[in-house]
Amino acid sequence: MATYDLAVIGGGPAGLAAAMYGGMRGLSTAVFEAEAFGGQLINLYPTKPVTNFPAHAEIASRDIALQLAGQAAHVGADLFEWRPVDFAGRDRDGFVIHTGAGPAVGGGDLVAAGNGGARAESPDDDRPGDTGGHVARGADGTVTARTLVLALGLGRFMPRRLGLAGEERFEGRGLAYRLPPIEQITARQIVVVGGGDSALDTALSLRTVADVTLVHRREAFSAYVFSQQRLAEADIRLVTNGEIVELQGDDRLERVIVALSDDTTVDLPADLLMVSIGQVPELAGVERWDLALNDARAPVSSAMEAGTPGLFAAGDFAEYAGKVKMIATAVAEGSTAAASAERFIMSMS
Image 1 (spheres, one colour):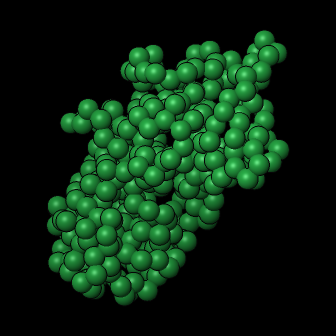
Image 2 (cartoon, one colour):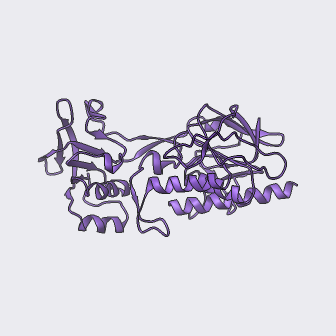
């Protein structure tokens, strides 16, 4: 059974930052992600342009995710993706984590710090397009750790659907809930529905490859003012105070019918409809973990302490007064959690 100084559950920005700073501080570190590394950045919005991450005027979500994961692997953290955690709880020396099966991306042979560390096999077959690490084998599904960071975000996400009759018929046939790589898009007439940051960012990125119409059920948008200014300057058609009521087409989507608030309708040709009206989070099962979690959030101190000795939380799962939910905030919280984990280990030595 592998033993780490620091285990991180969740491979979004907060979790990857915790793994990176844990590795830099000499802690043997592992991070477990139920899907692909990057959390929402890569599993929901891989090509979404991010304009509020420091040092980058604009950067694709996927690039932030891959760079964070690559840096964590570079400093020696073991990265296990597509490895959901079934259970986490206290044990005599810290924490025990039971995981499902899945491949791993590792930072190579890990030199353990402190009492006990894990070494993962590092075959020569690199994972193209992942983090630049290696496939790590030998994990038996159970690991122990002296400290634990919960970076669960809001859990797994399911896209919020339009709720239209026959909606499923067009999925993968002109209807999408997650933005595919821009270079793979062949559509020429695209309709985006939504009024938040993701919808506006999606429309702005797609305008470079197609004619784009943005449909929103209200007059005002809820996105950042900066994004709204960019939208006003872009060559994007706006249909506000409208709701999509029907999808038309034979083998593929061909048209979108929008009902307006004045009881008229608009017929929009569309060979791609991007639905960006939110996500439904799913954190089922976490309440059964032996970590004294009473809610879908963990109240934390300024040191990201989550109430149980050696347990920390970061990212969207962590809750405190005045919190601002941004990628930069998650990275800061993850680094703070790793520093606190190191201090806790030193205090127990």
